[in-house]
Length: 129
Image (cartoon, rainbow, N blue to C red; front, side, top):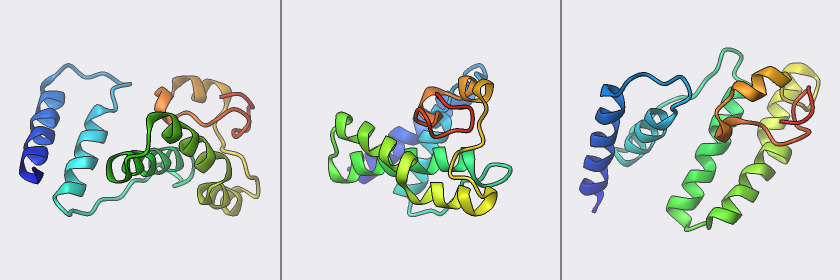
């Protein structure tokens, strides 16, 4: 089963690499993250400052892990993602870096992010996500 999953993810990653570039297509990130985990590999997720985009990526990955490894339903996964982004440790990381408990995304940046990487309403400096 593990080998089958690894092969499927490798095929998916190759397909995504050979398809035309899409600035909003985050499938390659998701496929390679899952493949790395299945191979017992290590990786890091960082944005320029290590706060905002990193927080969105890490909380999304944690949610996906809860779904895959623990059978969390889609509905509960969405609630868990929102809770982590509103109240989780990544908000404390932001506060320690900026003295504010809000993500630094402005309105335009929030609109440009792929939907899965947008902060929940009221958690960014420009209000609604």
